[in-house]
Image (cartoon, rainbow, N blue to C red; front, top):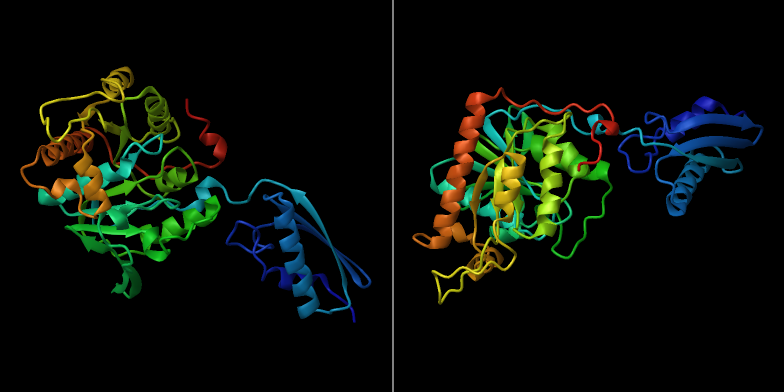
Length: 377
């Protein structure tokens, strides 16, 4: 039996390149195929150099060739390591979402500063003000919105929009929410590489029936990485809000978050900084303020970066309890905690109005290669 290169190519078209949703041929991972009698030599370039990844792919290729062509064939795989064919600009093609007026990215350079808690409470406050609000929980590896809004275990339903099936966000306290947490079990870890996480985000953003929204808040994961690049390339972000605590270690990372949005290749307006856990106020001493993490750190950062300080939020036990019980603290009428969130949210709205009045609409960022986003300082 004569073996043709075309038959080998057809088999390899059925096997995905590691870390990609493209097959070995269309991703250009296969660089050479040689046939010598009953032996096939295949050169494959992969971006994942681990022994386990090479072994798994080799077994898959050999098994497929034996099954589809001839079991007696000897198959030799030669691996080389090369950069991934998935560039940042190819992850998601940027386009606006019809019906959504303003998209606000809420970020933090460091984890544990209360970014998701602040996002949830701003969303609830905006809803109480009469705005139509949605939250995209973009923290793929640590989604928390289902817990904070008491909707764990909920599953988005399908809704037909213009002949296409779309996911319908779960609504709680007047806020529409989509999160990867709706599709995973509570004790299930999401172990995905960047391209897979970006693809999941793509579906949450564009395969969903958000309807008409005044604000879509995007709860970003901590740091500056693949998810951030995917979001700013996929959507025309109106502006960004950075969350930090007053301590220097958090402020150092907040500077990096600000620098990311201000990169020459990105240029997303930073609406301001919110200082969370600015001071501790015990329940029995409502007028006392204890500056556990330092004082005026975010204020000094805002002045040095020439961006607004949107407000300071207290460290209060009831805020933590409210988040754990799935009822954001901003729902508590006539409390000084709710008043603090109202004050901060009003500043966010003022800044977005000012931004929309003075600046042209933000376009989705186009980055042709990763060098376009150098390390932020």
